[in-house]
Image (cartoon, rainbow, N blue to C red):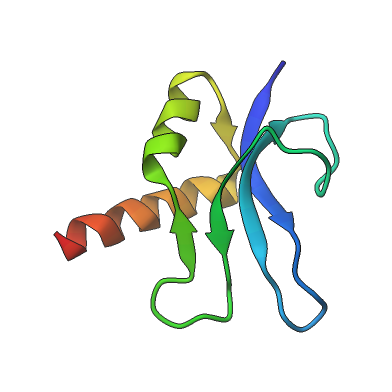
Length: 85
């Protein structure tokens, strides 16, 4: 079972909201997820991504691969945490 860390859309047409999820690679974009890791709201100013980095690290250690978009967002979230500390 190949797992991916990716986005799934749950918002409406002009109010986008995405969940950061771990899902099987062959499942649909909005299909069943193994675990919900956070949210991404592209319209928000400041920090639009809210993700549990401890759970991301856990799933990466188990072999889950992030999509290219999620890879960039995880890097940005890590930089934001370091900047706050």
